[in-house]
Image 1: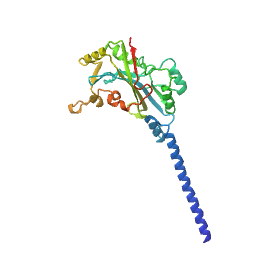
Image 2: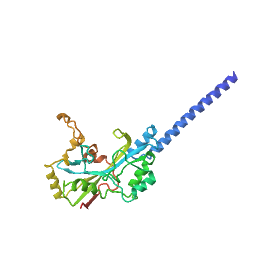
Image 3: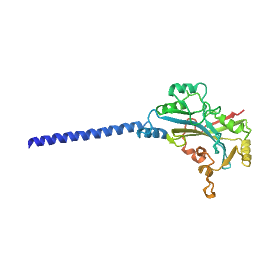
Image 4: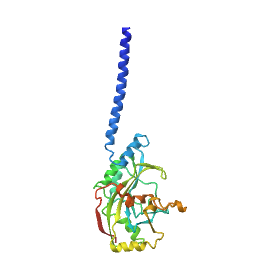
Length: 285
């Protein structure tokens, strides 16, 4: 009988040790996960972490990035939009993808082994765009580089290139200078893009045009002469992407990124360095 008690005690001890070990293992793992989460200071980092933990992506998973800037141009409660240059049939804010300068692209190839985007054909207008592919393991360092002073690229203090190409060269307005205010940044979660069949992250810096009195009059005159190159839309139209279900108009003619430029959306933007600062006048000629 005594031997049976000893065996029972030994069994209980072994079971207790196993349970304690399992509980300790769970505690350590949860503590480590919580520690990792401390570094996920933005939503896109959290989404990246969750996808990796869930086994949806790995370190070598190819991720598509598209980093751009957009203009909010508002007059009489309507927003000016221009036709998409990729012939999608949709209208969107003035703006476009950031571009490299100097030898920045070569440096990024050496640092992070970046690859050209294979979803949109590379031509003269898209050359040197911040529309790229990169392995998931380099994504955070890539974003850190983008935000650093070391990156040789277009910056928020002069994003006049796309305004010049879409508004001046197309003859919509004939201005010599512009000024604008930096409203903040939108960064999407890392998510699977159904159209391109790849995980993707988007970045949009939003600036608000500050027109002079003469430029305001020019914009008011544009309200009465929309054509195939530009249109005006209300916030309600932009939120619905141009669809009007009650009128049976089920066609989306406004790009979904346009929502990020609405005044109503500004509070949701990230306040980056330079937030609220006014830049300009910047020469367009």
